[in-house]
Image 1 (cartoon, helix red, strand yellow):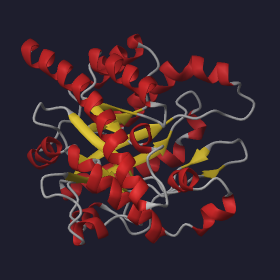
Image 2 (cartoon, rainbow, N blue to C red):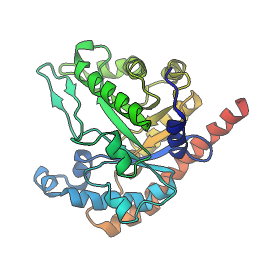
Image 3 (cartoon, rainbow, N blue to C red):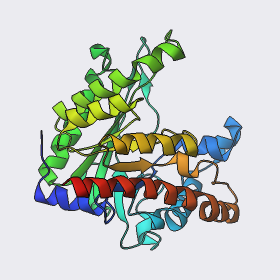
Length: 304
């Protein structure tokens, strides 16, 4: 396994709570956030990057301030939240490298994209504790992954040259003609083998989809070895995600990087409403997740 350097380890410590577990608020979405703020595609198109930046600033102020780290994009949110003093000095910052959306091949394979001009050196210049790259993977279709693996390898190498922390995320997806039932049955193996691809590319910290079962979570932990992994929320409802966090932590996960499950029904174009709902709904949800993570962090410490 590829171990973290001293500099990367320091960055990793900063995205973790005092219990040593990752607790990151994910807020790097752009297209997905627009669909939450408006139902009509025409209205969604009217939502500017600046308006998204205001929503993200509110999430940082009212929710991320209750965590230890926030994941933001370099299009709408950064450097504004830093320059405006919204991001608290003791909250770490991960900056997303992946562009919103994806391209498609004739076969329906998803091709990941990067935000132009955003590399490890630029992440450092923006005040980032580290970066985050997301690629799409279908581990059962090697021909689907060539483009995305190339992106991943280049990003891993770039951050290694700069000696800067990089969190690697991948998402799986349904293929044309594949039923929902067929896809769900494949998820544990897709996550396990996708994890293997990321590790083979030199990943040192992972952000993973929920592997689907307790056994699959344990399998990811065995495969990852010393490489820590956090479970992402993928926009499921809070109660579902809370159960997933419980299962993942019980089976070796090292924390949570969560976004929409916390704030998807709390944001609005009315900033006063957003502030109220983040404070009264999202923060209590976060506290519940933190309690689960802390419980298993304690057990890990005892075992050590």
